[in-house]
Amino acid sequence: MAGQQHDHSHGHGPDHDHDHEHVTGDPADPRYRRVLWWALLINAALFFIELAGAVGADSVSLLADAMDFAGDALNYGLSLMALAMGLVWRSRVAWLKGVTMLVWGLAVLARAGWMAWDGTLPRAETMGAVAILAFAANLGVAFMLYAYREGDANMRSVWLCTRNDAIGNVAVMLAAAGVFATSSAWPDLIVAAGMALLAVSAGREVLKRAGHEMRSAPPPHEH
Image (tube, rainbow, N blue to C red; front, side, top):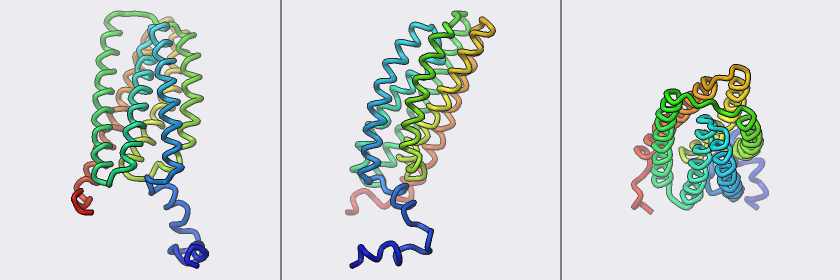
């Protein structure tokens, strides 16, 4: 039967385009859908945890991370919706997420500027504890999504969000250590600005990829 011969005759070589293509390129993969649901639930829970921590710690980098979790929960929800769509609509959803990343990054830069002017000193211990918890959660989500990082623009945007979150969590931990060591808010503000620039960079990449897919995809009315 054809199913029996798949392993031997369907690829272009003994180790080329086999499981890799099935796992990374197909957004309808049910395993990918399950991963997105887990990612959505984890990010939604961590948004509330980090928001409470940010308020308690007076930390702009922790607040930025909390906003990022909220954006990612929405991101995963949109991605689940996009799985049932054609390539053009998946690309449009990815484009919308790219815009969201850009807006979020610019908003955090503005907030960091305001906090620098205000001069509030964050609570380093709260920052560090919440960031460690968030990092552990993001590491788990990133591990689940790693195999899908080279899919279409929508899948790529999901991977970039999760990767950026894990990097951001490490940065918040470093900021907490810096605040503790220096008794200054500047480590917190610098990290928040860096996270914002990372969001802007990722947003631009997703917009570029989504734009290319929208231009090259067949018209959506062709069925």
